[in-house]
Image (cartoon, one colour):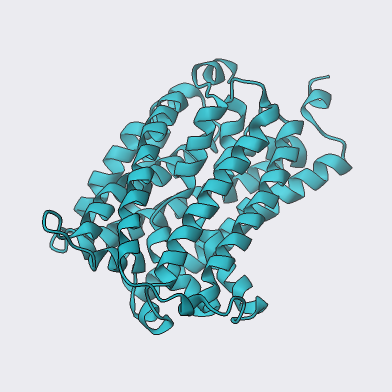
Length: 366
């Protein structure tokens, strides 16, 4: 394990981009549609609240990881809860990353089928996407990190593309008065935003590989969370001031609909350009889940590439699930529940138990 960490060492600078790319994915494109169902014009407030919730969990992660600085999530479970219970919890952790990765891939394929390649079989798109993701996921973490740093430059291009929408008429009354939806509905909307921001839990796997002084890791993770929160809030806000609640209800991917209405003499379909570029951030989140799922099995370095390939095949089988909206919605509900357990509940319980039982890495090494 020690040799593997030496080979896979990353900097806090790279960690910042790893976390950003892990969180950004396909969910952003449909998030305004999901949030407005409850929060209406206050959807952007829901996203800010979700960002605060993520920050609270990052503090919980930081307190837990400080006690076990060289261990990954699935190793901490066994140190704190014991081998038997720890392995039992690790099954849920593994299933979470596999199922979330499968759901992300399904939504990715459905989006491409709907907007870009309507006549291409879904299994073929799935095979192409997962082949590329497996190719990168089998690499060392530092190579993945370098790719994520480069891929983040595309986010700036996406932001620039969205700026073009500001030249169209805006209706700010759609978001006024602020808070009119009520705190209950705003909190319900923040639940959708929180699920869209999942990926920050990858910190529990990246942390042991950080080469520098780890005192600034919480600050780095917090900056990444701030970036994602503002990025999501920005896109939700510009969507809300362009479309009424009734219109958003009928749009599956409002952000793409917004860009579709913009055209120039040299560029006719800005939405397709946006989506083509967005495919890279969508793929990076799948790569993260492949990496986390494979690492959660705590196998030796030589077995890691084979594990990634097997997990990639499992994701492919998951994508063969019928793309019926009702089935995907039900699948999403089960995955969301499991994610709350793995991302929020288990780390919090591990932190509490480590304090109560006075367990930390130093005591284990004595």
